[in-house]
Length: 197
Ligand code: SF4
Image (tube, rainbow, N blue to C red; front, side):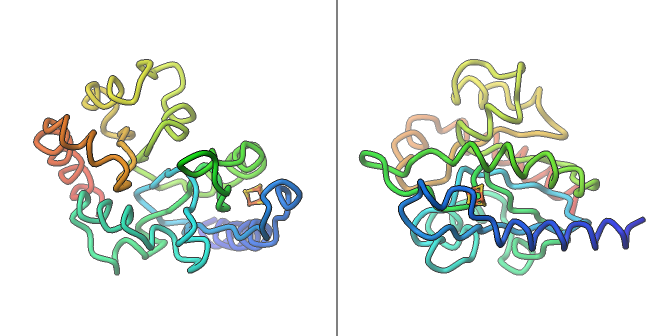
């Protein structure tokens, strides 16, 4: 069973790698960037790759990723081990710019791939729903109406789910304005990660 799951996941990841669904709308060549292994315990559900990650092809290979690993107190070897951590954003390709930031993740991606991919990760014990798009998807009717309200209620989502803000440098003002996040949520996050890995 584990072996067939692994084969199925390998096959699906190859299909995703070849996906060109959004080729006509992205304005650049699609480059899906994600990581997943059948034994993964933690699912990092981010937004979509930024330009730097689009260029390197390495998920969370940027300032946001450094801050996220610091939040998790996790070294790169663990973070990039697909049998421990799945890195599955809401959109797998860089969506391009919109105004002063990046465009939203492509909705086609979630519809096309998430229902097929997530069942192949049966050992996930914690989903980190990072930012508004992942929180809309994973919190569903438990969504509190805003990102800050979701985070304030972080305890009620554990042990299987935890909403997080995006660790982007663009959110530094929010981190400063909400010191309880670092003081309360991060210790809770680290304790749960410690239980799983
Ligand atoms: S964003 Fe997702 S659906 Fe669109 S081309 Fe990339 S992998 Fe395919």
